[in-house]
Image 1 (cartoon, rainbow, N blue to C red):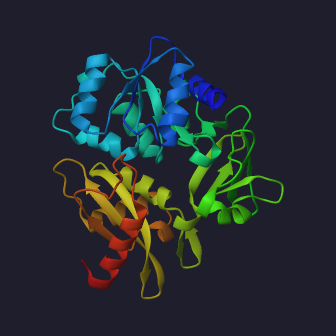
Image 2 (image 1 turned 180 degrees about the vertical axis):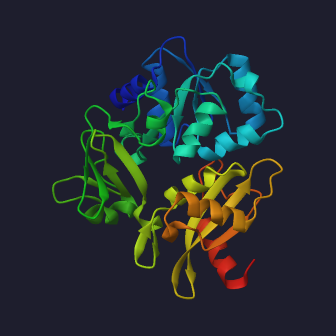
Length: 319
C-alpha cells in the first residue's frame, strides 16, 4: 500500500512543501489507500475535512494554502457553484486527483485552478489506483486518458473489452458473504476482472470507457454513458450531466439529466442539436431532463442506481 501510494504521489509531483486537501473519508480507498500514503511518503501535509461541505473546503484551501486536492466531479461542481467561490481563493492549488469525463478534468484544472490535476483509474480491489496520468502532461492528454499503469501494475484488455488487472496490489479475494463472487471475479490465471470496459491507446496509456453494467444497448449498439456526458458537458449552459439507459417502447433508450450552469436555461432542442453536431446519431439522447442536482453520495460520486430509477419513472410517466 505504501509503495503504490508513493507512486501515485510521484505522478502528482508531490513534495515536502505540498498541502493536500482530502475531503473524502479515510475509510474509503481514495483516502486511506491513496491520499494518505501518497502524501506521507513525500513528506507533505494532509489537510483533512471531516465531511465534504463546499464552503468549509474553500476555507481550508485558503487558510492552509492547499496545493493539491483530491476531488470528484460532484465535489468540483459544488465548489464552483458555491456563492463563496472565487478563483482567488483557490490560487494556491496546483495538482491533485480526479475522475470523470474529459470535461470534468478540464473544469478542475481551468476553473477550480488545479492546473496539473491528474486523471486516474482504479478501485479498492486494485489498491486504490492502478493508472494515473503524469501531472506535467498537457491538459488535453490528461483529460482524455487515465495514464500509464503504475509501476508493478499489470493491465490487459479481454476480447470483450473487459479490463483485467494483475500484480501485487490486487486483492487476494473477497471474504465472508462476498466470497461467493471470487469464482467470477478472477480469471483462471489469477487476474482481477474489474467489470469495466476500456482500451489501451497505441502509446500504452489506458482509456476508461465505462462500467460494463452501465453500457446502454441502443439499437444493438453499445453506447458509453461517459461519452455522451462528455459531449453534453461541452455545452456552455451545462454544469453537470448524467446519462443512463431506460426501457423504451422499442428497447433501451438514452436518457440525459442535465444540471444548468448558473441561471442558464438550456432547452431539449438545443441540447439535442448540440449532441448531433458533436456525436454520432445513435449517441444522441432520446429524452432530456433539466434538474437542479444529480443524485450523489456524500463524497460526490454519482448514484447511477438512483438515476436509473428516475429515468425509468420519466419514461413511464413523463415526469
